[in-house]
Structures are given as structure tokens and as C-alpha cells.
Length: 288
Image (tube, rainbow, N blue to C red; front, side, top):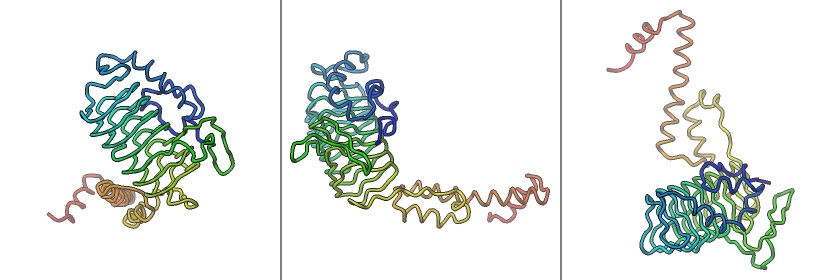
């Protein structure tokens, strides 16, 4: 069962000391309101208390149509967009995006989190650089109104909470239109396919495709990358590991040059060539 230190790098939140007091992250949900009020009273001049118990950093951007209830802290560089509805008890970190028509309630949002389009996040904690796709939500109350139980394959923990949305570890990507059912815990560096209905524990470093099909991201070896850099780069796409075009091109270049460097070093050792001589040989065969 994932504990706080398994899910989060606490250096990326003003709630570091608060969260450190607990073993499991959902144990922190009940005290978020009081913690924000206490923390707000200690903030420096870079924050403005725009309303009672509502502190906004001077470098944050809040659109006029956004509603921010009490208590709340908005960190530096964060953007709260049109018609965002922050009901209160929300600690929002630095460089976050709280988008249009997004609703927050009783949450801790780590730094660099994006909740950009039509999301509901309630009674939840979102880890560093996590991202919720458009329309994805945390469902925080069971339909039968019973207390939430966090379940894995071999363990079940009674939380004693009626309202408990989801715990997202660092660098979690939630696909558009997904529903995270009450008591969902997603390990760090995991991806949730769009239109998923997720419940229970999702392992760290995995891809949730649908119920019953969760695959662990494959770890790529350096030997494979050296022997077959083109195939290695292609395999990253085949394994559904999310990479930008720029990152892929950079990786391909590095993996292509690495075996060439090894060959040159081997030639130097076998033929007793100086670096200057080897450089002249390489330069003579390269096009001008």
C-alpha cells in the first residue's frame, strides 16, 4: 500500500511538514482547512490576503471571473483561469494551471500541476507535475454513501472517510474524460488511458488501459540502445511511453553517436593512435 513518501516528493509543496506527520496521504484530508489558515498567517510580503484567509502570490494570475473561497493559498506563477470555482480549503502550489470551469474543494495541489479544462477535484491530493486531461474528475463520494475503503489485490484499508477522491503521485497523467472513483490511489509516473473508470490501486510506473489491463512500463536497457538505436527509439513508441518529438530525436542522436564513440575508442587502444591522428582520419572521410 502506497504511503506518502512513496507517492510524493514533498519538497515540491508548502505542505511538506504537514504531510510528513502522516503515514498515508488520505489521513491528511480532514485537517487541510485548519492547516491552510495556520500556514497563511506565516506567509511573507510576496503574498496578498485579498479576502479573509485567501492568500494569493503577487506573481500569480487570477482572472476576474474566477471565484476563490476561503481558506485558500495560490502559489507563485500559478494561473487561475476564467470561471474557475475554488470552493475553499485549497492549497495550490507554484506554476500550476487551474483552468476554465474547474472546481476544487479540500485539496492539496503540488507545484507544476495542471488541471486545465472542466475538471472536478475534491478531497484529493495531486502530486508534483501531475496532469488531469480535459473532463477528467475525482469522484469523492460512493453512490451508497458508505465509508471509503482503499483496496489493493492483497490488502484493504478502512479510511473512515465518507469523502475521499483520489491520491495522484508525482508525474501522473490522467487521460481526458476519465473518472477516478472514491479511494483511487495512482502511483507516480503512471498514465491513465482516456475515458477510463479507475478504482483501487494503480501501480507506479504503469499504464492503465482499462479494468483488468494494467501494464508496467518496460525498462529499456543500455545494451539494446547501443546495438540497435533505431529499433530502440521505435520500441519506445510501441510500448506507449509518452515522449515528445524533440525528446525522441535527442535520444535517437545520443544513442546513434554512442556506439560510434565506442568504436573510435577501441581503434585508439588497438592501433595506438593519438587523438590528433584519429581526428584527422575522421575529418578526411566526412563531407565538406
